[in-house]
Amino acid sequence: MSWLHLWTIVFFGAFGAFVVISALVAVRGYGEVRALFQAPVPPPADEGGRARRPGDEGD
Image (cartoon, rainbow, N blue to C red; front, side, top):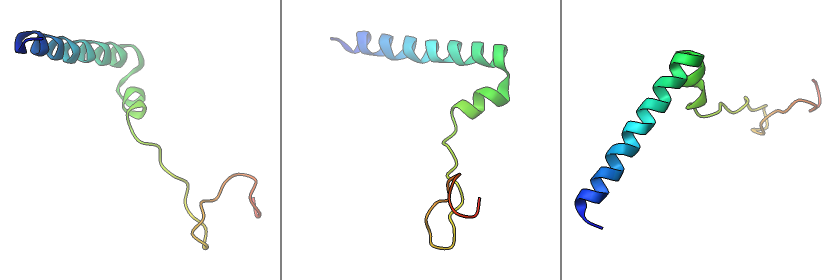
């Protein structure tokens, strides 16, 4: 595989990602698409350092 082949694949992959993300923003809105690409926020830890979950004591 030559460098031309490699750069063609990289270019069209990046261009395709740009088109797909732009279409998602147009259809769903910027806020909802931005939330798709953000890391999930862990729940706050209790005093013992263990993350609290629904159903734990005190809920």
